[in-house]
Image (cartoon, rainbow, N blue to C red; front, side):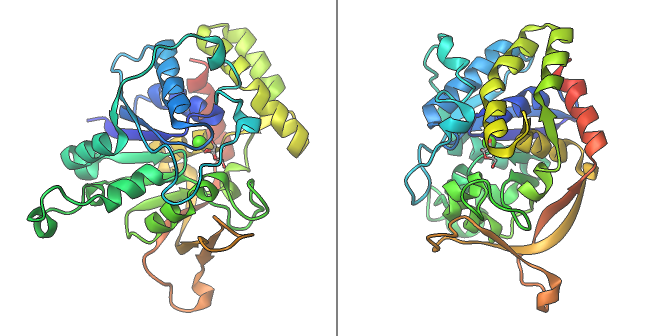
Amino acid sequence: MLRPVILDTDAGVDDALSIILALRSPEISVRAITTVAGNVEVEKCTRNVALLLNLLQPRDRPTVARGAAKPLKRNLVTAPEVHGKDGLGNVASRRRIAPVKTKSAVAVMGELCDSLGQKLTIIALGPLTNLALLLKQKPRALRMLKKKPRALRKVGRIVSMGGAFHVPGNTGPVAEFNYYVDPDAAQLLMNSGLPITVIPLDVTEQVVLMRREVEYRAKRRASAVARFVLSATKQYMRYHKRTEGFYGGYLHDPIAVAAAVFPSLMEIKKLHVEVETEGKLTRGMTIAESHRSGAPRKPEVHVATKIDRERFLRFFHERLWK
Ligand code: RIB
Ligand code: CA
């Protein structure tokens, strides 16, 4: 049986590349795509997912479920300067997409956790708000309190793109965007004891996709998806040119998908991770307690420390330009 996954996404540009990769990976079966506010508002995320599914026409169309419109406790912070006001480099705003009626993300996630249990992997590409809401969900009937473990506790694996440990943040000096937007959700998940693999900026910034390579490959492939990738990544890459000095883009979320499909692409460490939720200057900062600080505190999560760059890029290009 193909490994069933849920993609939880704040449907920005690198998320869009991830959705294409995931739907073109024969090793997994994308059962649902749940949306969460982050790069852009959740309505736009949900519309972007619908646009991508219309473009990709997958044989087994995943369920789309709208999720949290704001973080657990904070006001929403979005990133239109990175992903465009519509979240897809202003490609989506030029297309008419019918409003998307969906079930709630927490309901869909809970049902799939209950029905698939250990077989299920959740790949979280945005703030962890939906997962935190599911974890906190009170069972409907008090009598279930004792007997039935919370749905999310049945999941086999959670792969979360987020955090920055030994590199500067990308949202202020120390925080990565997903965990900055909802630090409370990230802290809850990191200390939940759930089987989480964190894919931080330390790893995702080891790979860069240059604009000239996208232009070359998109021209050679000349498909509707290739044209979409070329136009949707333009603003994202111009943002990196302005702020990072290279005309290209990081592939944060595609690396998280690759880690879920081929865990052997990553080197990992088991660490206890805390997320700063009180600090004014350090909101969303991830602190890992290494073994050097005495006996490791529990619970621990898997933190990716290194990626096999060549193998990842083969995976990425082979599927993106199919
Ligand atoms: O910090 C990078 C992460 O934040 C990526 O998932 C990007 O899409 C944004 O959600
Ligand atoms: Ca994302």
